[in-house]
Length: 107
Image 1: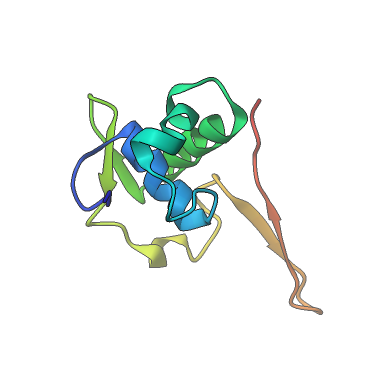
Image 2: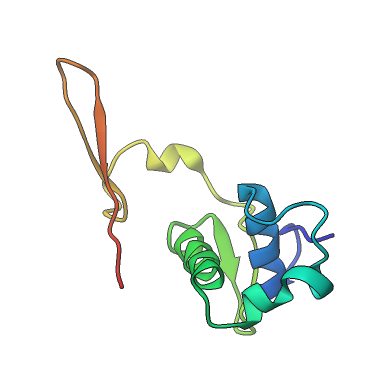
């Protein structure tokens, strides 16, 4: 139904992400069952919106002036091999190899 290969309205993008995360079930109809999640003031819709905005911030998605989203065809995962961008910071314990991520959360 929705994909992010082309410019997609915010509610469609939220639906796509919600389905990918398993929050929205495949049998849920966008317009009949779950559109209220994207159009209402609730934690799930807000979380999905923040998730989309964060993916724009790291360059995985593009966002246009009409608040539509699509995949960034130039996204390069290898550019995230270090923590130089400062969006997601992490530390690696050299002895154990354990990686600790520090995720900034804004309320």
